[in-house]
Length: 469
Image (cartoon, rainbow, N blue to C red; front, top):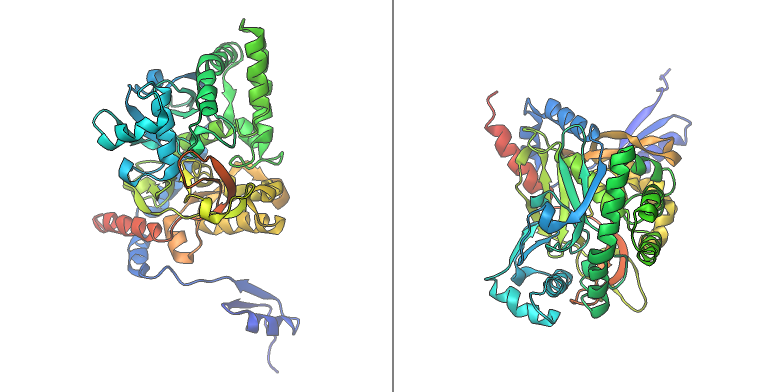
C-alpha cells in the first residue's frame, strides 16, 4: 500500500499543484523564480561573504532604532549653507543638458525666485552657461526633495533630528498639488505662492515648532507616522491623517504666537487644505532612519532610491555614496483631465525614500483608498505589501498594517533578494508633465529599472571578494 503524503511542496507551474489538491492532499505552493540573468556568480560571492548576515542585522537594527522629531524650520541658506546660484535637486547627480522638462522648469522658477533672472524663461541661458550656477543632489546635503526637489537658498525647510544621536535631515515645505514648482511649473502664481511661503508661512511655522519644542518637547514625526498608517494613510501619496495631526500639534502655538491674525488664518487654511503637507516630513523622517545604516560594510540593504526625471538611482549601506543608475520609467496610472501617457515625464523625485523605508507603495495595504489616485484595485494593494516582504530583510513593528493582522511593514530592501527573485520594489508616485511649466498630469505606479540591482550586486560582490576569508 502506497503511503499518502502529509503534504506536497510544488514550485513553478500550477498544473501539478492543482492535480494534487484535487486529491485532497495539502499543497504548499512555492512561488520560485530564477535569479536575474547574469547574477548567479555575484549572488554566490555575496552569499559567501562572512560579514553579510551580521552586517544586514546591524543595518536593519540601526534603521529601526531611529526616531525623528521636528525641531526647527528655517531657510536653506541658514541650514545648509546654500548661497545664490547653488541649487539642489532630487535624484542622483545630473547636469542641465540631461535634465528633464520638470526639473528644468523647477530650476527656472527657482532662479526667478532668487532674483537671478526676472523672467524664468531667461534662466535657460543662465543654466546653459553654467558659470554662476551649480546643481547638486539633495541627498548629498542631508536633505530630500519631492518630485523635481529643487531647493534654493531662500526656501524654508523642516529640520528633523534623531534626539539620541543629534543627526539631522531636511526638506522644503510642501506647496500643494497641480501647478507647483516641484512639478516643473513656474508661472506667476507659483512664484507668488513660494514668496508667501517664505515671508509668512515659514516664520509662522518656525515660531510654532520652536514653541512646542521648548514647552512640551519636539513633535514626534515617527509617532505620527505610526498613527497615520492605522488611519488610512501610507505616507507617500496619502497623508491626510498625518497632515491633520501635525496641524493639531502646531496650530495652538501658531494662534498664540503673536502673528498677524489674517496671516495665521491663511496659513492654517493652507496647511489644512493641503493633504500632502505632511509628505515633506515623512520623507526626511525616512531618510533620517535609513542614513543610520550608511557605511555598514558588507550590508546589501538599499538606503536610498531616488529619481531626477532622467535617471533612477539607488545607494546601498555597503557601498558608501556610490550611485547605481538606469533610465527612469514612466508610471502606469491615472491622468488628470485630457492628459495621457505621452504627456508624462519619466519618474522623478526623492519621495521613493518612503518606499525604501517600508511605507508608501510598500504599505499600500494600509491605504486601500490610494487606488483611486494611482490606479489598480484594493486586492492589488494588499498583494503589493505581501509581495514586498519577499525582498526585504525584516519588518518594522512600529509601523504596522491593520488589515494584515498588524504585521509590520516590509523594511530593508535587500539587493540580493531583488536579484534572486526578480521582484522589483513598488513605488506609487505623482506624474509631472514632460514639458517644463506644465505641472502635474497624473499619478500612478512605477518600479525601478531592473538593471540597477545587478549593478549594485556586482559592486557588492567586488567588495566581498576583497574581504579576507
